[in-house]
Image 1 (cartoon, rainbow, N blue to C red):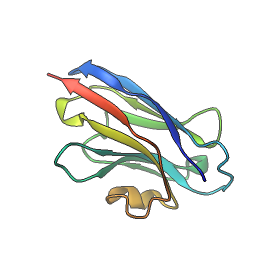
Image 2: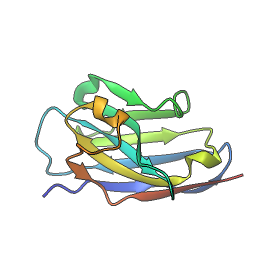
Image 3: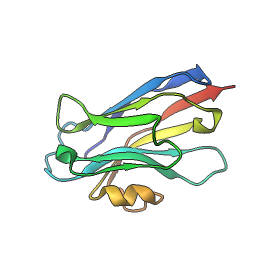
Image 4: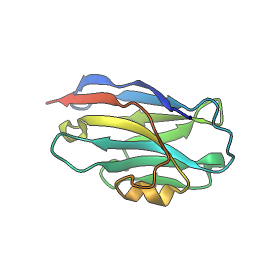
Length: 125
């Protein structure tokens, strides 16, 4: 069983920055999209950003474009999410996810194959 493992997150003030990382050791497939979804209390889960292996395609939610950057870490099955200019509306639990397609990150994650345990991001005004 593959279990993506996340690190990072925390609490910052508006305008601050945080970086999330996710690794999925033991995941041996060559072609997949890996990134993050988030869910705030009382709201539907939404895709934030995803990056296909080898950089083939990338997804960003409109709400984070220009502020968040997803990249591959040193290992193929790792992802980094640099979050700048954070806003209170970015407050949510962030979940690392693996899916076959970055296009699925535009949805609510119904086709995600593997989920991380989640890490909390809190932005105060």
